[in-house]
Length: 125
Image (cartoon, rainbow, N blue to C red):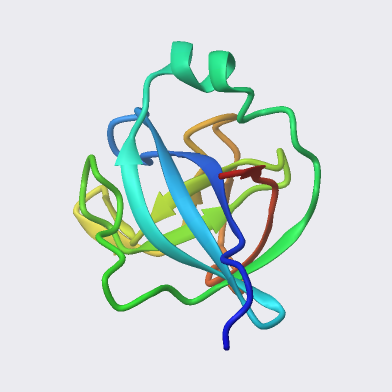
């Protein structure tokens, strides 16, 4: 018999539109797996307290039904040293495909390493 479901919501931003979205993550063993993503506005983020939790959770891979970023459809995520998450999928820069990532929160640009394994904060769901 399976134990109770443990799920959280973390906040991310679309790297393309800069709009916020929630990522529902579910604990599976020692990892947290993204299972759903949905648009969310800044007022609701603050009202629901999604920014308050500081617990770290290793987010890996994604559920087969994970829909990706609700704003642009990118399936991958990337974390920045500003401790925020954005969608990721490479971008065209000066007409050339680039895997460099520009954080939609702080503007930091870097080459991601291990973008599918992120320590994330989340609020119980």
